[in-house]
Length: 576
Image (tube, one colour):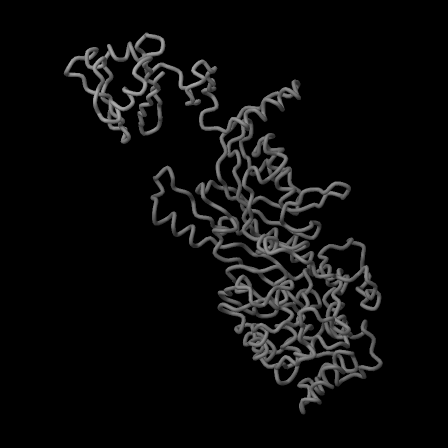
């Protein structure tokens, strides 16, 4: 039995033609290899016979003579091209049943079809929904994160309650609206869901991007965006969606993220005389031959600090206003964060030498203060390429360096490999404004004209600025100020800092040098480390809860905010 395979390659289809001859197995193989025809084949075709050639470029094939086709065809019909393809090339199974192909499965994975068939067999009453085309899309969303466990979708673990997340609520609405098929409704990974910025639990965003493959035209739904919004909670909004290039990924193609951090200006008032932090920093400054810069501060010198209560102090703090000197000091300090630095001290515990700690901060600004109700607020805008988990620790350094008169040069040391403890500022003040896609927008504008069918609209949140500003005011600003007015959250936080009597904050000194007592060394336990409290990660409280935060009641371990231990992959996913 002789099996010779002639490959015919066209631009889209590859076809195998099996040529069979029952005799001359060895001699015929050698004859084809030597480009000579055996005598019997020569007699069949005559001297003018031209051998079939392998046409690997797909530019044409030499036809096989009719006489030779008849003799080489296994059935004797001469129709070589129509013979079924035998994928088993072994010679000992010539009569093996041929595998049939379902034309409807062309270009799809057969195992996926088997999976669907099996599912249908197990669910005979379930009707097959029509398969609608999916397109890669970017969804512009905004949300108040107070009632949610962060941005990223979390699978429910067995035996544990469901974690409400922004992506979880959005994905459920997309499935219900028909923008995601039932086949893909169990796992967002199936539609390639990604986000431009991942926010922590409780953190707000007036603008963020989620990318995924979705059904853009749902039968019977005239306005899909409006339909999805009716299915979302009122504190999550879909501003709009648009088709993007197939290679689009919201996280990887995002050039920068813009955040704003708000805090009451009274955080700049120096530590209260007699407080633990005041005593520790004063004693350390004295050991260096220095004095603390805030001696005889006007805010504390007009009263007797030893007799005033924290409730009385808070009333006076809310009436306090930052001076131009305070604002100038803040603006000078924050410029030190710009450009590329090693931010290992401003995220969760990391190897200081890991290159992934490097981040590029484009522009950071301190706005003029604004008074809302009785309290003056300061807004700090942060425009950076990307931010690591809990990078709001930057705001702790900004506020504490300003309020203690520590030299700006301390930041240079914090960017070095020395590890120290820097707490997080309250989550209540953090807001993601929107992500930026300048590179993507520029690239599509240069390559394609708007008339091109492959052209995609640039991603621009300005198209939704009116709705976004209204949402920001109602769900974010008003909520933030109401919580501070009712709970005194920021005042409780600064009092928790001032009540600390250990060595973790000794880097806040007149020389701006990190002393050995404040350095964290791997494998060594710190004596009396500062313990953060869970309440300062919250951004939502009951509307009738007006009880002020009591620092003295937050000393038990149940209220302690233990820093999580994450893998490198988890840290990458937590970037925003």
